[in-house]
Each structure stands twice: as structure tokens, then as C-alpha cells.
Image (cartoon, rainbow, N blue to C red; front, side, top):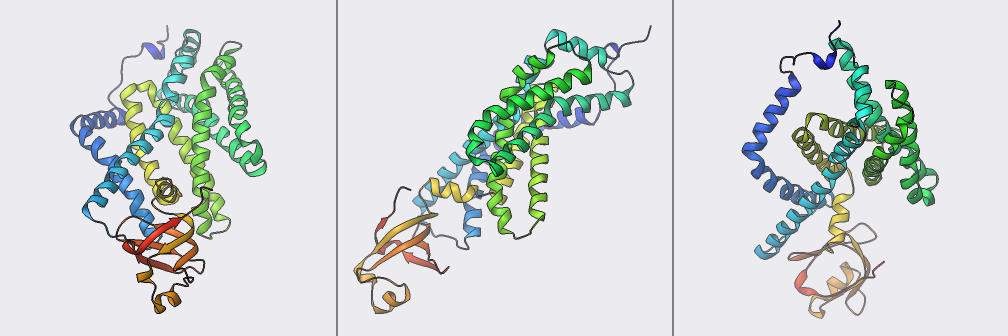
Length: 350
């Protein structure tokens, strides 16, 4: 009688086991340092990229610099935590609700080939059909709706994952010879996970769009969007599928890829600009900027185009924390005005 694949003795340790063992050892020794240092460094990097893009570096006193570091740490922990969730949680949910279901599990065991070469392709097919294909299809569908019918985007966030999960469930059922109506169990297990990953990837791409368009690379920009969509959905699929190797494996890879995506978000998205604006530190349009009369001599009035009341109107505030206020006018001039001469900044909430 031919030996079943599930009954075979364990093979020698492969590269994945070695990588996981090294990862476990590294995290056991340095987890505290990584957890304490990585998020604050990432948060501080957001501000550094904002300074670099706007071609200035502010001056601080010790209290202001300490406040900025605290804000950077809080932002870093929040963003990396948000990134880990859609990478990690789909794995245990789909695994427990679908792959570990007794009937599904037994059928998958029976369909596994005996030969190692065939087994590798079988595992890849399982990972692609259960995870990568629906993640990728949902992202592509959401982006299509965002481009062609943006008013329907909110509705598509809920409907697109249902349609994608239904079709993917039918495909998985046919590909692995699962019992009838197994696609409904997959729909139940994958709907929320596909929604989370698809929305997460689509959000990253929409944040990337303004920066990529600014490079003026023509049609190559579309190739960048497609590459990002493929890579991010593949990363989410890998992190989810690795849950079959245990919680540690999935969590390690999720944290690692979350740090990579966070770095990408700081370099190639508008995250730095939106973060600075959300904190009220800059990147907003001021209706009026009132200066002290002692600052408004004849030369200053002429150079800065101030009105008779020593005020600037409709000016873009780049940065407002520190010894100098950084401004940019409509004619793309950048001005630095000492903060001690600022009487008031008037801005609307819109």
C-alpha cells in the first residue's frame, strides 16, 4: 500500500525552517530593542522626509524637539500597528474558518501529492487560490471603481469582496475537489479578510498616486501602480498563508513586511504631508498671517508683499513649530519669518 503524504516522516530542515529559527532567535534577543526603537525611528523619519521634500530643516529648542520625538514615537507605533493588522489577521481567520474545517481539511489531505516536486506546486496553488488571487482581484476591482465611478467606491468596499470571495470559493472548490457548497464556507471565511486586504492595498495605491504622478514618467507610472498592487497583495498573501506554520511565523513576517511597507509609505506616498497637517504643524493654507508692526519696515513690506496692516493673505504654511515659521507663496517663494513676530494665524477648517 502506497504511503500517504501525511504519514511520511519529517524531512530534513529546509531553508524556511532555518530562516524561522534564526528569526525566532533574533526576536528573542532583540525584540525589546526593535519594539522600542523601530516605531519612533519610523515616526521621526516621516518628519525628516517632509523636511527633505520641502527643502528646509527647522530649528528647535530642547522642549520643542522632545515634543516632536514623542509625537514621532506615537505616530510610529500607531501606523505600524495599523499595518500589521491587515497583514496578520486574515491568516488565522481563513485558516480556522476554512482550512481547518474537518471536511475541507480531510479533502485537502487526500488531494496532496506524494512527490516533493508535485507537493511544492500544490502548496503554491493552494496559497495563490485561497489568498493571493482574491486579495489581488479585490484590489484591482476597488481601483477600477475608484477610477471609473468614484461615487460608488464606498458601496464597492462591501460588495466587491463578496463577489471576489464567491468566485474564488468556486475556483478553490473545483481545483481541489472539495465537497459541494464548500465555496459558501470560503465566502464566509474570506469575505472580511479580502475586504481588509483589498481596501488596505487600494488605500496605499491611492496615497502613492500623487507622488508617482509628480515624477512625470508618463505611462511608466501605470507599471509602478501595477507592480505595487502585485507586491502588496502578494505580501499580504504570504503573511496570511504562513499562519499554517504557526503564530510566530506569521507574526514575524507580518511585522517585518509592515516595517517595509511603512518605509515605502514614508518615501513614495503623501503620508508625511498628511501627518504634518493632521497634527496642525504645517502643510495647510492660511487665510491671513498677522505680523508685529515692529517687523514691518519699508523693505519688509516690499519684499514680502505685506498689506498696510502688516499681514499676508492666502499663504501656504509649510511648518509652524520652532524658531521660524516657514511659508510658501503662490509664486513658489519660500519665506522664513521668526516666530516671535507672528501675532496670529487665521485659517478656515475646510
